[in-house]
Image (cartoon, rainbow, N blue to C red; front, side):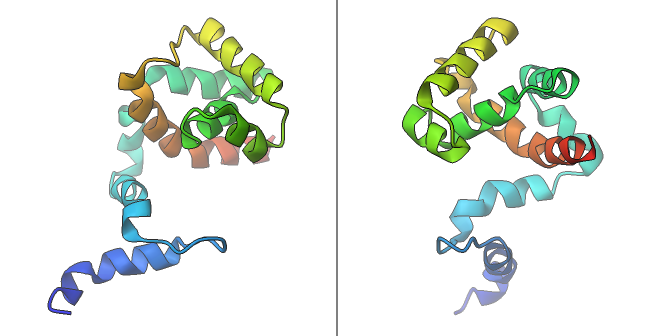
Length: 135
């Protein structure tokens, strides 16, 4: 209680971002909160060029590589969970991931890039959805 003032904003942010199916701790949304503090005009500077290219490719070719990669990253590279998230067969997910690797020259086994790709997806997620809804 001595530090309630210090953590009040964090608690309010966590409460505001709770989902129906889970209790939300600030640690679960800390990266989202961090990204929220970056000026909208500057957020793209923190995105990997390869992830931006994938989102742009989807827009131009009406594919869903960005959403597939994003789901795969959020599911820690697990095909079963990714297929359940996207309601697709795991072979379709595997096919798309292989296309992403081939088309965009990404090595999805490169663990050093995992966090950068995930943060890039988080940054681009809202604009990707907005552009997708506008079509």
